[in-house]
Picture 1 (cartoon, one colour):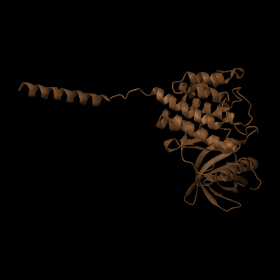
Picture 2 (cartoon, helix red, strand yellow):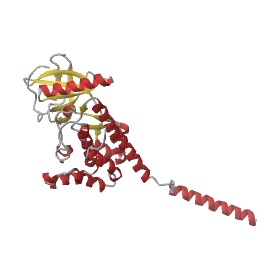
Picture 3 (cartoon, one colour):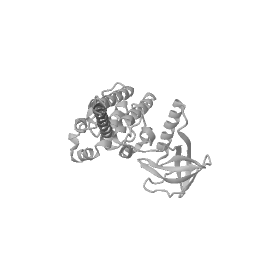
Picture 4 (cartoon, helix red, strand yellow):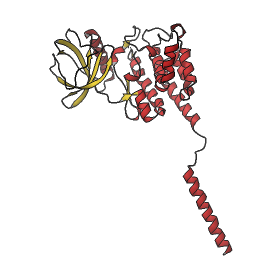
Length: 309
């Protein structure tokens, strides 16, 4: 990628804009804006008939760092490549860096739960922790976990998007969102480690299921009073979160040994909560009880006719 300046993240490009790579010569047609991050914009685009996602950067070095991270993950996992192309394009007289990724269809966590039901948060949470475990084992911390950066598709499958906050373990977190940040809650430093992602994951579920009270807390608490205990208080007073309060306490205070342990602990807590909600004996539907009663009455009547005839 060459040097140059990027378009402002505040100025959106029109659908139908053609992006032509300066070095590789590939042409991409922008279809619509998918999202705006701290260091660029992400668009749904097409290359021929294939859909893809393109991130236009604000800074060459930042975007190149993201592309390098994605390339290293592709190399390690040896799955279908996530990173498809890296290049520059000329837009409005400026040279703009971009990279091309697989397009991951799906909706943000809260949208998915509203449409399909909050009971899915157990499955989604486990899959998210498993994905984070893979990243952590590779030496990377995702950093900017939040509702918009996790897309959920059919049957609760998840994909992480916008890798701008991905940080090598031990370095300072590159990007974060305030209410998901443990530094904001006086719960630890902004040094990248697995516990940083555990904390953000815990806040994600509070945000997804108890947004109103969480935002009220951020507006009313003084900075010196912010504490993970305040978040735990929300968990313990919410009907869906309370059964998992043990897991949330360990996540908010960084008390897991590994992310794999956090994932298994989550699964066990969800299963235990599901078992507690299940009645000991199955409930007979009302219509079935009615049919049974009618059949019994008919049998008694027939028997009476037979006995006294």
